[in-house]
Length: 68
Figure 1: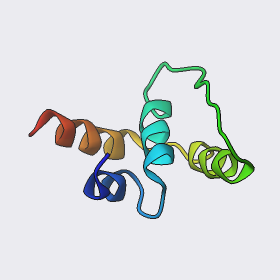
Figure 2: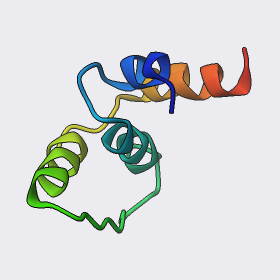
Figure 3: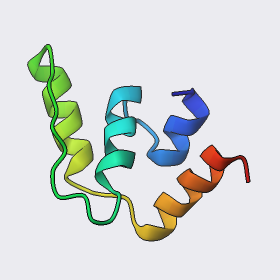
Figure 4: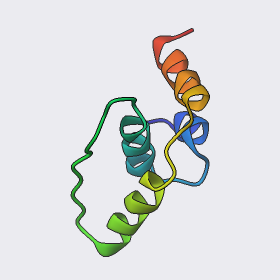
């Protein structure tokens, strides 16, 4: 997870939270299982997942990952 990709997903998130947000925003996905070593990490991920990416934002991320 590069800093540029994190900023594309949602500026200010940790790399782990950005990755989980991208996965958790996929259509048809009902559950994202997460684990955290600290309360701070858990709060970071919970905050990120509370506001999923829009379909347009998710498309930009997947296009970037596909190299388009």
